[in-house]
Image (cartoon, rainbow, N blue to C red; front, side):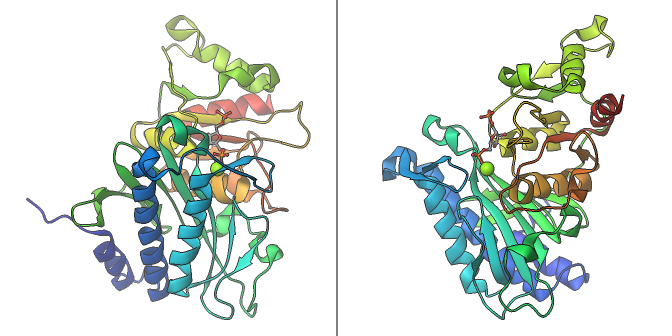
Length: 331
Ligand code: AHM
Ligand code: MG
């Protein structure tokens, strides 16, 4: 049997190939340690008394779970030691925080525990991260320095804390999946060069929002549920976990289309998912794996951010179906 490749060896191999810098190796090392620690905390559930609300709200007015805050602290601690990240932005922090002033090439944006409304009911949650370059000549990066479109990302990934813990990562050349082997305490390459099938008959959307969809989305989902005798000529299946990492991981593996579309009735929230630390990193992974990601009106990763916590409509996944829905938006 071929010797499994552990995450650290993978990083050194990429460095030897000239794909990534030594700085990126240490940054990824720190990130993987953080995710192992979060995986441990999540798996302890009620045993360590961290379920439930922390009694606080984040900047977006959402109730923070205790594990949201613990996961955020773990990320900050693990990154601090690497000295590779000058500043970070997180779903759980109002503003940018400087980590290693004057040191490090990168900015990191993350959602420490996405889908956290699922924690109490023992359903998969995850961590999402996006690595940007720290602008040259800026010692202490501020919010403006994070306003980079998704096309500027150097690396991105997510970790699903599910039946097993899996990290899916792109360093900008391909997408690889690493499963956490708890016995040896390391992520192991188990899903090399992940590719999203171009065709699918599975969709993922919160159908309870259907009264506030735009006509293009209403038309598309209507056609999906008409099955073999409808205009799409095939039977579709529907899945909605309510944790983007889990819903996206399914489509990374077996194809699918994931939609959290625009709500035209809510001017303050043009979508639910956050551009910088949810939509952009996942879009980078999806595109690197051969899929597409759009707002319905254009490539998602080309949206120019104006705010750290802004939201964006998301339509992503298997190429053929995403193209179809985007086409309906322009009709
Ligand atoms: P969160 O960052 O507050 O956890 O919200 C993001 C989550 C996504 O993981 C998921 O796709 C979506 O929100 C679920 O939304 P809904 O509550 O409409 O099912
Ligand atoms: Mg989130």
